Length: 408
Length: 87
Image (cartoon, rainbow over all chains, first blue to last red; front, top):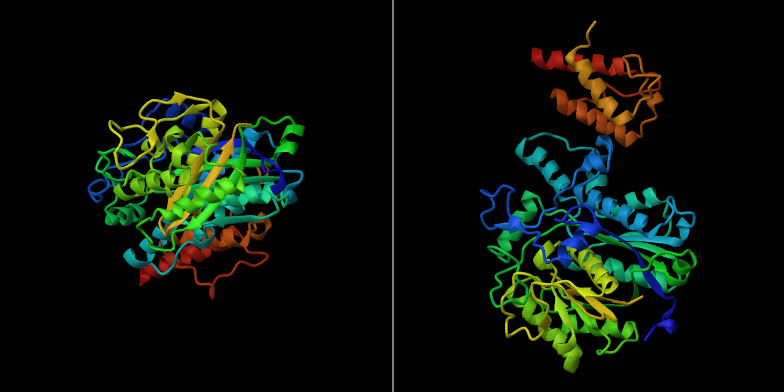
């Protein structure tokens, strides 16, 4: 089962989260394992955003707790979220900062929209106030690689440092690439995940216009589902050469054993069954696993009509007779759809599920939609032995990732 | 003498961006180049001053050299304020 022949074994040794449950991975796990809903009525310009009824905005976050006023001025919100979560993950892993072997470490942080509020501030000056200039720090704050670069400086990491931007699979791609870098021996440690700001007028207007948002709660795989609910924040993990982690006596949440990527190559918005099937199969093959080895899937599960049917069908296609024995959850029902952060938040949830041997629930579901033939863990977390678990991300643009972790 | 509103505003902007030492507080005679501020941060400070006082700092008229002090910048900003009032 273990992919020795594919390279080194990789452990997850640190987890950091910023979400609607606060700026802390412990708060995140306490909330989702208790089935608490982090979604609330939209309080951001509700009169101007009639189509955005609910959201899971970051709460309990105070920049002054993490940055000086001058620092915060230089950091877009998505960079702040990434830095807070990454600091937590690195602290949790017990790694020394600055890292003594920083040239043997990598950072890959995904985002879908980057520093959207910085761009908006510039446009506001140019087009609304008719001013002739924008802040000289516009580029350095708005650029998608700002979190990766800031973290490189903060941690003294000098190896591969980059960003992925593939909409809702941004973090999935980041974690998959980082996993392969560690497994292949290119680096010994990787800080990876995703970050996103959603509480922004332009972002919310764009999502409102797509008419995919729920009028209330997010109910993935439920017969009553009526769309997704946006969330935001950051989910960052530390991946590490497992032998090295054991040598330094680090706590290991779980072992990462496989990753898969695919593209639907058919439509930007409408997912097909073959694309996600391909990603899940690729992840199993990458880990030398068979369809009977997975006990839990943290589904992409957005709560939109189309996504959930397609993803459930893809799971059936890949896992066949084993499908009924796999406990599926969509934690977006609690923390919302974090876009570029989504794959990071859900990978964190999946690692913690394996670590605690507890499957978090899909909340707000009375009846599973009969069209979605999966064993859904509804409303209340349930303990079970989890040998291995998978986390899926299916992005607009038809880009899919599947990540697999196993009990350490 | 109490500093003018413009002087207080400029010092406040420098204070936020320059992290001055306790032994050498920022004054009119502080040399800007001695503060060791990165060029991008200097531009951001000038941008913040433009925003605060509703003026434009024209690089043809004002550049920061080795000896330029916060007082020099203050004089320039006050000059711009007066000229915009006069026009």
